[in-house]
Image (cartoon, rainbow over all chains, first blue to last red; front, side, top):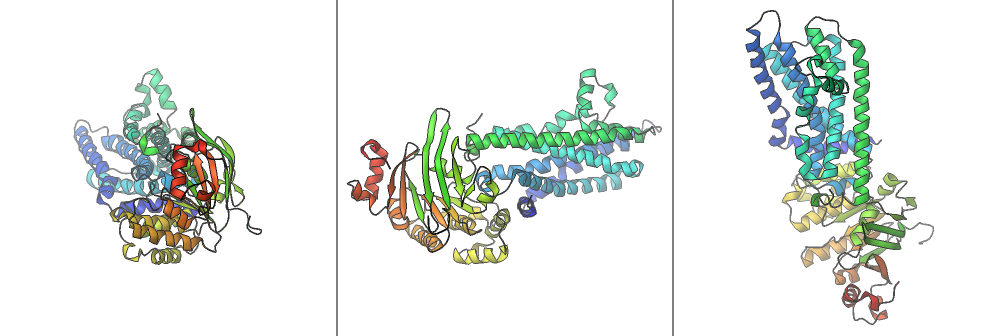
Length: 266
Length: 251
């Protein structure tokens, strides 16, 4: 692994972002809208009961879920820049290894998702009184698991677009929304029907949101479940990398990289 | 071979088929250090397929590619560190400036002393005044010069140029030919050049290979080859290769 090649991919993304308001604003605009919207919803819900605080339960969940989505989009957006610029031939004819290219996308995502996280945290705490203190040290594994799973989703999404062509970009944006009902972002996994609970068990975020709810309700936190959740997130990440590698090999075998914009391979 | 130095490119029995269509069929050739080899042939003859395989973005069905003795299949990254390319259909991202593009690709190719090398290439390719201009705003000729600067960044020992002067005006094309010729002369760099401009090929190439239906049909000195086959010039020979390849003896 050559750090210079990883840096090249991240540097390209930083050049694009810092020179473009249309790339900077989306880093925080939509998550701020989400936080403001859910902030007022939770404030309204709190007027009905004094025994339960909806701010950490709902607003906290939205913040964490949006963080994971931003991580995913950080990877896919950096990848899409190569799609939009028709840059695959230039990039993949260099000595760069696949692991270096993907690492560059991840580094880009760390930077862009951190911006979103900081802005969300500032708005949620300053405007709606969200506190991270109750999570304590568990905040680190919660964010870590969501980060790993977000990276896995991003790499899998990029592989899908590499395989199906630029128009398949449409498939990527709804992925977080499709997963959220299974992940128990706003409700306990126990309320789901059996088959959905099975899916939820395979999704690392479900363990994070179960843990968050336990903290808010003052129940024992299933700390023991976080280690398997982290391993599950790593497994998803490895699977996503393997999927990307497989699609890349297919693209090299069929000539897809050289004629990508033609969408000639279905 | 030139002395003890290995061929910068050695292609053996290369084959590629897309479904039932055989695009490259048992192609073998070599490029020596300091040599400019023209890869010629009509549209669909297999030139770009061959170049894409040498670039490592297309896997051959059979055959081997060695760049300075390194097998591209097993030593892809090390082999590609020694090569670079410019092609009219692969412009650099138009939303980055000239300098930004060169810096990004310089890092990808692991260029030592990158800032000094970028400054040197900007001067050589007469791009200093465009260093902070986005590539998408440049003219075709200027974009080609940026692509060539990128292609020279790592001082490649193998340079692949796929129609580098296509769509350029004659003066700019001559200027660019001169720069490439000067870059190759006396150095360790071998060049594989495709072009449909036979006057250009005669001016630049030391040796040519004519591809037809994925096979090397003819090979030789572009100044001698036409006469050997009873043609007045390279253009006539090209037209014969394109229309009546069976009338020519294979290489």
